[in-house]
Every structure is written in C-alpha cells, then in structure tokens.
Amino acid sequence: MKGVILCAGFGTRMRPLTYTGAKHLLPVANKPIIEYALEALAAAGIKDIGLVVGGPTRDQIMEAVEDGSRFGVQTTYIAQESPRGLAHAVSMCREFVGDSRFVVYLGDNIIHGGITEFVRAFDETRSAQILVAQVEDPRPFGVADTRDGRVVRLIEKPKTKEINRAIVGVYAFTSEIFDAADRIQPSARGELEITDALQRLVEDGKLVTAIEVSSWWADTGRPEDVLEVNRRLLHDLAPNIECVTGGDWDAVGPISVGAGTKIHESKIRGPVIIGRDCEIEGCYIGPYTSISDGCVLRDTEIEFSILLPGVQISDMPLRIDSSLIGARSRLDRSETPARTLRFLMGSDSEIRL
Image (cartoon, rainbow, N blue to C red; front, side):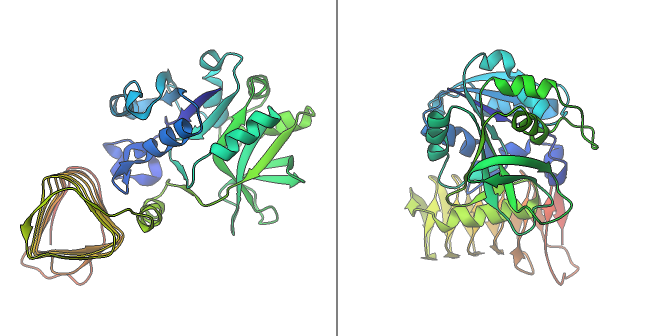
C-alpha cells in the first residue's frame, strides 16, 4: 500500500503568512503541519509516500521533508503545475501508484489519534473508503450521505445542513479512482472535485464506505483553525525541559522547553511549548502558546498564540492574545500607547507600537 500527501495549494486563506512560506510548514505545537501527516501514514505502516507539490512552495516542502528518512518513510515528489482540484491532484499520482492501493492525506489536515484503524478497515474491504466527521455546519465541506456505512451520495459544499457528515481529508482508493476522475467535468468553481469522482464510483455500483473519525479532526486552512489546533495539541503536551539557563522564573502546568533556551524573571503558565535557543526575560507566557526556535521576548505578556522562528518582541504595553506572528518578525513599543493588540503578521514584518 502506498501513501499520497497533497500539498500543492497556495494557502490563500492564510495570507499574509503564506506569501513567503508554505501553509503546510506552519508550526502547530512547534511542529510543521505536514509532519503530522507523514507520521500518521508511517504509524499506519505506509512507508512509500508520494507528495504532490507545486507553485512557489514546492522547493520549501522538498527541502523540509527531503527523502523522508527521518520520518521512517521514502518520499517521491510529484509535480502539479497548477492547482485544478483534488481529483486532478490524485490523477497526477497515477504513475507513482500503479496498481497499488493507496491512501490520500490532505497535507493541511490533522487527524488526532492517527489513521491506523482507517487503514486497517481499508485492508479488509479493499474498496474505496472515506473518513467522515459530524459537523454543525457542513456547508463549507464536501459531505457524504450514507446508509449503514455505505456511501450513497456525495455533495461538494451543500447549500443546506441536511447532510452533516463532512468528508475529512483522508481517502483510501484502488486504481479505479483514476478512471472515475477521467470521466468528470470541472465544477462551477472550475475544479475537478474528488467528491464528483467518488460519486462516479457510486453510480458505477462500486462500494464506497465511510468511517467516522474516532477522536477529532481539523483542517488548518484559516488562522483561527491553526490557533485552535495548537490549543488542542498543547492540551496533551508532555512536560519536557531539556536545559534552561537563567533564574527566578516560575512555571505552572505542562511546559516543554528546548535546549539552549534562557529564561529569567518570568512566569510561564502551561500548557506552553518553547523551542531551542530562545531568550525569555521579564515575561508572562500564558496557556496554549507555542514559541519556535530562536525567539527573543522581553517585558512581554502573551497567550494563546504562535510565534514562528526568530521572532523578537519587547516592551509590549498590553498582552498579546490569539496571534500568529511570522518568522523573524519584530515587535517593540513606540511612544503612542495602544488599547488592544491582535496580529496576523507575515514573515520579516516589523511593527512598532
């Protein structure tokens, strides 16, 4: 069995962060999103993985993942020059997949608890299979109408809430999906939809089954989604303080701190994860905050936020909350006082307050 990770999108909903970097490399709990997909496939026993890459982020993803050996997998890169829908991206994998069965994982999704049971069920049925989750508002998603676990109809972005089983970003296919994808037309938004290809299988009388997510699932397509996933992952954080120099700092709750980090005269209220070689002085770091490697914070209060590598923040007049701050950005105080602070900053930004 082979695996396919789709990571060729432009991440328009995550701008300005994605103007300079791939959304699949944004960190949650200090780990790039795409690594959760790689680890989930590897844990399910899938070691031969193709990554569909394209656009300006292609080289970034290839550099980050390399040959996959540090994840215990072997990677092949498949070029998609322009994003034309999920069914088109899957079709690009025809040569890589051959006659093998394969699992498709959307590279910006996180499935808590992994996909091992999903893959085990696919081993038993050996027919197309989708992962679904019940949602309050299914209209932004593709949805599946099921009868006793069998899919009878699929709709992309329904106009009503009648069917509330959203299709999660993990699919299992045989090579039959390629013929089905060849026989569909672009949707109203000009894309080849995977739901249409699956619907074609259903209409051909092929078995398509739906498996419900056992824990939680998240699509990290928007800034608020990334912050919420970060919160959920940090909720399960295992305390781990490798080596900290400095002194007079107080910590409560689960804390993880990387080697080489210096903390002085600060309060940290977990769950919080701090990367390597950071400097924290005179700060309050509140719950559900992830601070990447090489960040410098002085005289600052922050919580429920994510800092990418190399961020520098000093002398903030108010607490920073619910913020995503891009790599190497700088924040410091100006003469004019502010009343509230909330940021979505792209890489290399600099703001004075």
